[in-house]
Image (cartoon, rainbow, N blue to C red; front, side, top):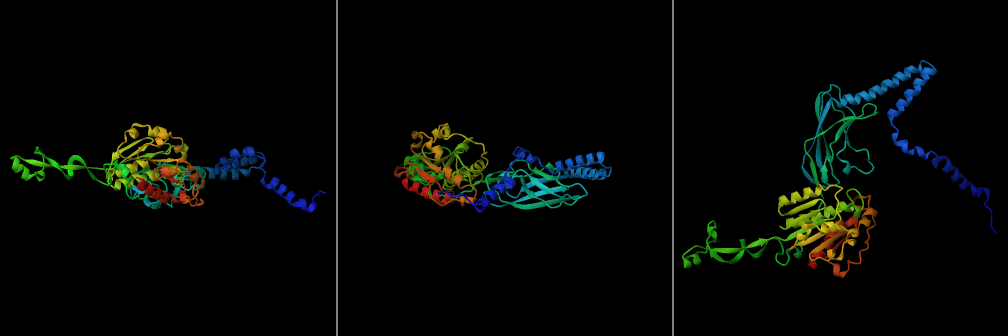
Length: 451
């Protein structure tokens, strides 16, 4: 037989209903769009209007309050504007290139032409990518007082969290002193810019597939005429040949100068193809799958260049041509640092470019995501000498919000069906944002063993 609830049992439900209707329910939701308009200047203007009405209809003494409000408005609007007319600022960095996470000294030089000091100065703009997500005001630093008729230099340590060229836009030095009713400012002259290279990690050795059965590791001699390597044969002397290469015994026998021919050396060739289409990547900020793809590509290219290889990088907006050496390493890292956020090109289009088709006699490493790999035709996936570094973009989306993905459970993701035994050494699967470097090194080792 059903029982009816007693009055005591109904009290918690009644209390929660009353609490919701009194403290939680939003009966004026249509005004929420206007809440960002709240500003101290608007409050003072409304107070001035109300005081003027009171002075007109009620009593003349309200004019005293109206005059005080108008004086506060005039002071709050004029002081920042006059202060901004009297100073100039210059920004510079102590270094030109650093890597993500490395500190660099920033110097801001301010010249105050007014006899009075400047208060409430703040640097705004130019460093938005490195600000925490909870700080959406765009201010990168606040400054102390600048004395009058003096040049003051402020220094602080800037730790870039994400690659790029800083400042990203022309910063402004603004002030809202004394009441913060509005902000006036001037552009800061940027004396030197900072290029932040992507963070890299070493990958030892280079797969032998990069040599295409002729060159293996480092600089290796091949059977073509050159100036180094082993002895290949002899030929008659030509003007310009070094006397060190003269074969004196053969020269005496033939009564003319005979020189030795030597082998030439060949470098392993590597082409890195970087898929940066925002559609196939997940997450935002320095721990997104897109930024990790850039770091992986930079690590592969830099490690290969350290082993005297020739490296070419194919990007959505162009090609970093084949090259080697320290100068090429800097040029490559500069280009990777300057990749814009809007750079995009489908992977099918990248693999169909002439630069990609012309790459032969070496190794191809494609850095992409699982969804992009699934959309590729089978013929593009099975091309000889082509290997894939695949990031599981869904894992990067769920693990977003903590450094290095540390807030995620450390578990293995689900690999696609293609990543079976036959694919070992062809696919390097990255599905743990907290351990990208470890998974990359383990997959690179498998690639070395398979090739």
